[in-house]
Image 1 (cartoon, helix red, strand yellow):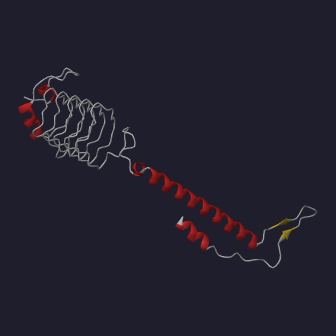
Image 2 (cartoon, rainbow, N blue to C red):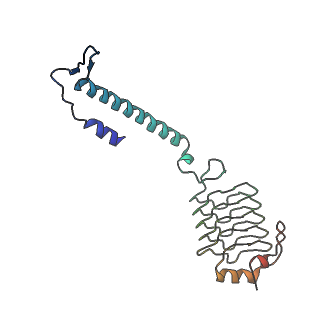
Image 3 (tube, one colour):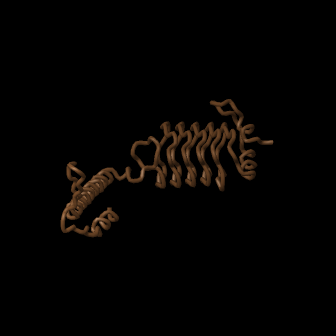
Length: 215
């Protein structure tokens, strides 16, 4: 809007011809070119109308965000209007909820309860899940890149196709019955998990050690 105001305020005055111009050809009607003052007036009216509309739009948007701050920066996903990205959600109870593709990027989720939650495609990128309960959760294709998943409970969780790149750590986590099929793990993480892996996933029927490609 500032650019528009600047443009409108700097419109140069159009020259006003001393006499209106007209063209004659035989007996055909005369066509007059509008004078400069008329054109200038039309442009000024147009700029004023656009400026008023812009102000009204900005005021309306401000009122909407003021009444519902979550709309200004929504975490994504279906969890109501609540923001879940970049938040401190320590101890929050998400158990049994459907949170498909929910955005938890960079959030603090220490001791959060995700037991039995549907978290397909959810993002835990660079999140802190220390001590979180992810048991029986559907974590297929979830993103754990750079996440801290230490001392978490992943028993019977299905992580098929999940991402665990970068410095993702599962140290101290319970993984009995967890399914790690097609999860890209660093060699040191795979070696560590294979030392504590046991059980069979009740949903997929896959042995945890086999899904980790343990030797």
